[in-house]
Length: 299
Image (cartoon, rainbow, N blue to C red):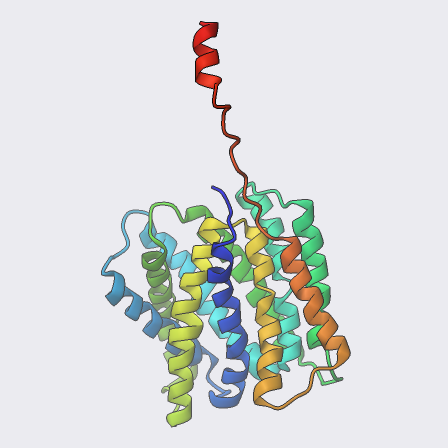
């Protein structure tokens, strides 16, 4: 399958949307209910996409949806919610920025997709740029938050590669709907047992949950899985570096923070890394105009 530039901006919708969720989660959502936070993110988005697609899983997609929904949605959302509450956004974003390298190595082992040298170089440059962009200040780091963020990064990388491997035989929107719904249903009883009654939420929290479910989840994952279908995993991972960069930009615009020259340099390096890992379109050489005539003469 040829990788073309037209899938890059579609895929970029996902990390840009995800980059805004750190701020929204930290500022507007209850810190003591990460499991319900994950349920409220996954289940409404999955049910909405089910209504749009009107397709149920078939064959092996029943158990695949359960596996992918657990990895990509329920456990991942709970860990990210926890990390967003326990860590500064810069630290959580930096840890997640290591996912391109992990995705490349996993894709090499699971789907025999050997990373190109430019992908590896781009990942190194991009991660260095993200580190320069987001590692500002000397804020205290919570060890549990780091563990949650690292675990989320590893689990989601495995889930994304499996989704790429199993993607054939189901459309992007239906498979995304199945994963989100399965992830939400798996986590719901766990949330009831572990956290009791759902948290009381005010109007800003309701708006924040709606934004995260619709934009940061339904739209973002549909765009992300579309990219995984049409682009190499290494390229998709590099595009994912826009996630922490977006987090910094949102903090700058919303919280009136200023970018230092080092941060600006980091942004430049990040985009340079994405460009280094860009997909290359391979054109099949056209036969010479006289080829059919020469072939007939040869016969």
